[in-house]
Image (cartoon, rainbow, N blue to C red; front, side):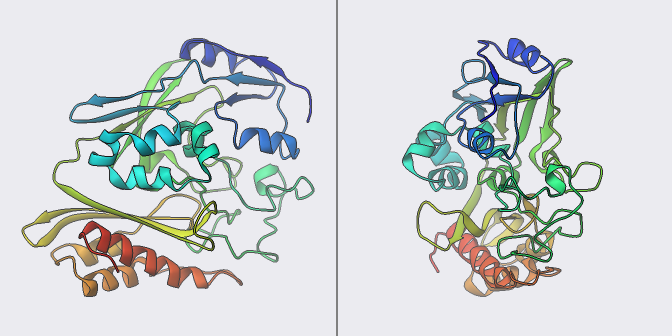
Length: 327
């Protein structure tokens, strides 16, 4: 690992100032992803800014919803009684990340800002678009775990955050702090598709900015479901997953959000699936129709067409979970 300087500010203001120290500066929270990238020479850093003491690590009521600090650990999020009661899909997503050791160390901010898990990106020898190269090696190589939606851009990665999908489904807002103060960004607008102009990034966060809080709106009378399809039952990355959030008008769906994970470079919202749900009861037939709509327009690569079927499975089971049923 290349040598680096280390600073440990105690306030967000000082942490933001430290990000402008010069050279390559990276914020460090749980370190589950960053330290692995440094060890593998996927990237280097001149300075690491420890933000664990500088950022909020609490979950507090806010306007009928919750305000979650970026330094809250995944374990604390998954076991918080308010999160479990009000936003069960978010708690479930957090509970399924990695192992207990990872959940005790990893943070909300770290998970939301996690870099791609693509094995070409994670290998030092492959200089892909994400690392300043001019090629996505997955196009002609191993692409079993790459995108089936939003893959018209130069990079075919899938977004690797487990929390991002329920955050978008629940209509969360992200608080970002920088040298010019704070700004709030809807979760759905925080994550970005890769283009030639921003291919090295996965979100709108500036190099001198920090994600400080996630604000979840008052849930109202919603129902939600979350389902992940994995090769292994535990300690594995999901191959496809879905969060569904619905409001009801009597026995029928009044409004819906269907957001897919591990199938696109961003959390992928399916408006077609939402339209298939609205005005219908939450039945097996409705769930299957919505799942079929969810994969309309999918563009599988040479080795990942299987993702179409497992995405449909994830949508069906998330909808049935929202209905209080099990497939």
